[in-house]
Image 1: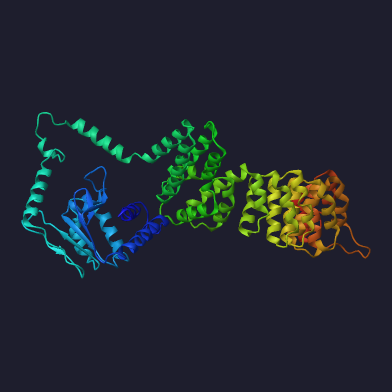
Image 2: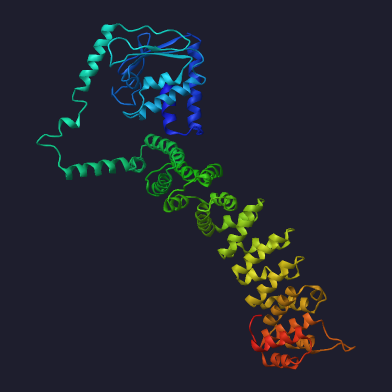
Length: 546
């Protein structure tokens, strides 16, 4: 019977897919095994405050409260006086009975009573006996195959009916109609006040008060046993709050645990470790994955401030899981909150960010690279520079872009090798970075590229990027090379390719000195349209980026 009560409570608190719910049902089914080894018929007599078997009380409410939480009273008030169970009931019908108990606890005056619910369920392994208190005589026993219940004597029915009538007239049940017209009935303002207070009381979340009370006791009482018991309660409370979707309570609990850890006197190493584990519990991969999966599929997310408060309690260990979900989440409302949490954790824990750049999980590593760039994380420069040897060109490009965003001398030095990369996109990104940041140490590599044969075979975009970088880095010292390319001829009187000459004009325009402008004017009458247009633009905007 205790297992039945616990299963009924679990069905009330948890969803059917919750492990606590499934565990309670399995425990209840297992409890029937030793019973059926002793008897094939389990007849339970139901009184107002207890349930009996063969005259012995097997379940009682110590308070004697006549409420829906008292299982005996729940059956008794609707006239059910006996339940008879037979083997097989524990398979499927026990769940059916738990559902009926849950419905009966929530039932209003307009809903079916418990007897009607039992009748509709059409049990095979459960029979019941009930009294119809509104009629004289004995109510019928609803049965399916199984042992028949013995009708109660008519005089007992009459006594119980009279007792029910007297109980309804007792002081325990008050009718507002008895007071509606009395001299001292409440006026409208007082009724409004009562309504507001009742509404406030019902909407107030007591879980926050429970958490505060537990942790206050933990801080004020140094008794090790008491503190251990409080930690037991807190560890049970956290998954309960998560299962109930009370994320504000979860955030409050974790935040207050951190506060208690800092101000509790004489705290033992064992209790300190348990408090730390409790604070880290939400950030563990399994727990956080389960939470984010539920949020991702939720039709309606919690309030934005409540979600931000919850994510603010995450620890550095959560960063890897968040990186995995940033690209996988299909919830447009969840992604901004995850992004903000990722920025906070990465900014506060650069060592963890650097570790994740080197992760074997491609999704995590790529997200860590992007975050390192957007946060301008100086600590990540070395790890990003090492990616210049990565076999994947897209990762090399992402590393170059991140280093350019960081923009420090060390970061720019880390991309110098990228000017000679095997991939076109990587080379272009490096050249543009040298030009925009005017990173002069890269001049020898850029000059080698401009003078080399490979640049002649490259497309126009790459040629322009490298000549632009050369003009930005070489200054007036680069005029001679650019002038030779733009205006010079070979031994046989041949000129360079039109695209190369146009790129040299761009470089001279970027240099913008008097010598560079003079070189451009010499080519202003050039017959080649491509070259002439490039020269014209360079003369109009000397020193500007093309």
